[in-house]
Length: 296
Image 1 (cartoon, one colour):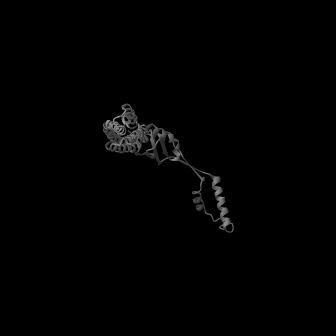
Image 2 (cartoon, one colour):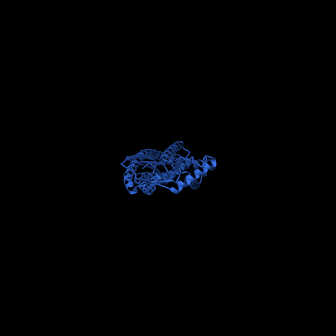
Image 3 (cartoon, helix red, strand yellow):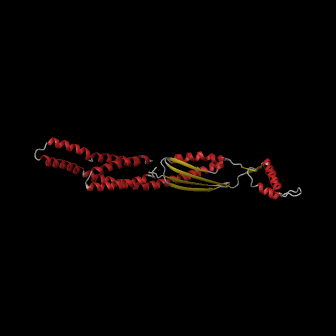
C-alpha cells in the first residue's frame, strides 16, 4: 500500500542560480496536482505535472519550485514616451498647485528620476535566459525530490497496511466465533416454533406446518448467507491489498459491503455473544476505513 500523504524537500546552488523543490501530499479522492513556479518559468509547469502524474495515482499534490538567479544577463530598456508623459504630468500638477514660480521649474532632476523608478512601464527589464538549460538543471533535482516523496509515502503506507491487516484479522476472528453460533441460532428458531405450536395445539401438531414455519423463519433470521458473503469480502480484501499497488478505492468499496453484512448479522441475532462480536467487528472496520482515507 502507498500513503497519499508525504513530504520531500531538495535544494541546489549552482553558478548562475539556486533552486529548491518542495513537494507536499494530502489525501484526496482523485489526483489533483498544483504547481507553483515563478511566472517567468511557467512554461515548465506541464513538464512538472507530467513527472508527478507518472509517480502518483491519487491524492492532492502540491509542488513548489523556487528559483533565485545570480548572474543572469539583463537588458533594461527605457520607454521614452512613457517617461515624457510622466514628466509632463508632473509639470501640470506643479503648475496647478502653484509650485512653479515666475516660470522656474521646481522639479529637480534627482527627484524626477527617483519618481520615475517607481512608475510602471517606464523601464522594461528582460533577462536573457535559456529555458532548456534551466530545465536540464532543475529536472534532476525534481526527480530526486519525487523519489524521496514516493519513498516517504511507501514507508507510511507500510505502517498503514500493517495496522489495516491487524484489524482485518480481528474481524476474521470474530466471524469464526459468530459462525460457531449459527447452529445455535437455527436450533433456537426450531425449538421456539415447536414450543409455540405445542402451546396452541397441544398434541395435534401438524409436522408439515411446523417445518414450513421453521423454514420461513430460518430464511428470515439465519445468518449463514451473511457470514458467507462476509468471508468472501474478507478474502477479496486480502487479495486486493496484496496484489494491487493502489487498491484504495476498491478496498473502500469492500468496507462498505462488509459493513452492510455485519449490520445485518447484528439485526438478525439476539444472542449476546454474537452481538458482542458484531460490536468488535464494527470497531475494527471503522479503524480500517479511517486508515483507508490515506491509502492511494
